[in-house]
Length: 130
Picture 1 (tube, helix red, strand yellow):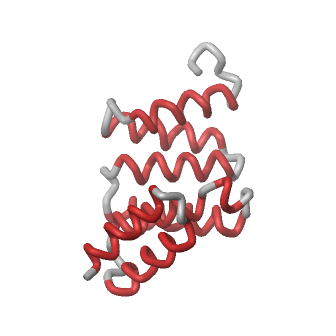
Picture 2 (cartoon, one colour):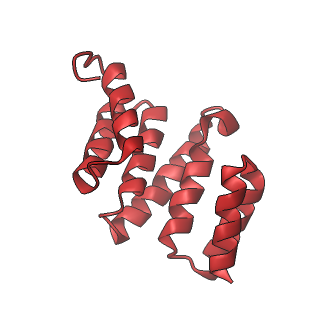
């Protein structure tokens, strides 16, 4: 049942139906609290700037979810990217840079990590790098 809910949650997320996707992902975590894919995607939804308008509490909750996943699965590139995006939204650009760099160490072709690294480098004043 968790697999079906995960597919539904991801489809809803891709369709921009954030609240419904969040509900499905939370249902998965009730069934399987350690489900890394559900946690990473829930963190992504909670951190969505257009949806949360940089709500600090939601962003911190999303960061905590990513950190929990990374404690269990430190080689998960998307969790590093999501944590970097969240840290950047929280104003912690140096820590965001570290997250994106770690994601690229794990998966050099990760386009999300490369894009977000460039944005973070520009925000950090590293114009030659970004």
